[in-house]
Image (cartoon, rainbow, N blue to C red; front, side, top):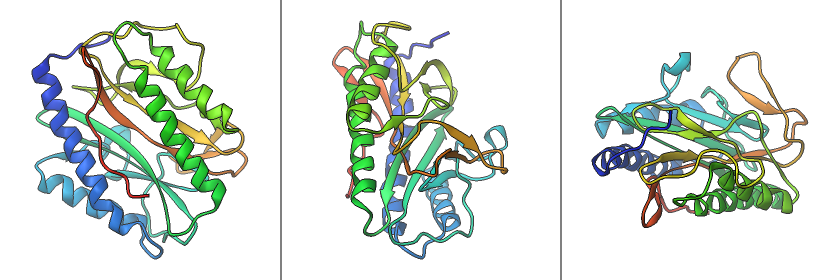
Length: 252
């Protein structure tokens, strides 16, 4: 069942989203060679708790940390560790916050120092596909209008969209209906209504779209070892169009 939110509930979700956006801004300074992903995790958890929130991912279905850190060929759900970032890496940071019983969720892929032209293009195309999807999140459209916009842009640029993981509704729960695939024909699925709150999150691979799971049972990686990028915003469907609740200014 898709849960429609009142203006007051959207305001509550916005509070969680604001902390998510601010945490991502706070992380930027750590995205450099020599930083470990565990250091990023510690900073994020401290920042979220200082703001009065709770890290939404910590303990969720047994996930051990506050943030997902996925490097290079890792698609999603990478576990923070003592691994140090090196020049040329790309790293996807996915984090969620709970405050007053409501969730916010966003993801960004950052370059580490100078990266290859291919990697930089992957990041730009993935972020552009997120905004192409968001543009379709208007009252009267259907869920797959979002999906189709993302897939069309990505494949036009010669990359592929991941099928194994999808976007989702969000609010009182981290994962609500509807699911939002990043692929599919337009005009399918639930019709979008005012009060829907959605986490739209294209995951884009430089090569094959297929993924596989590492032995840690969390980290998904590309089957061919090619790079992968991930961008996500939490948005609200409103009578004035899609409202991005986790908007933050990017630096690259």
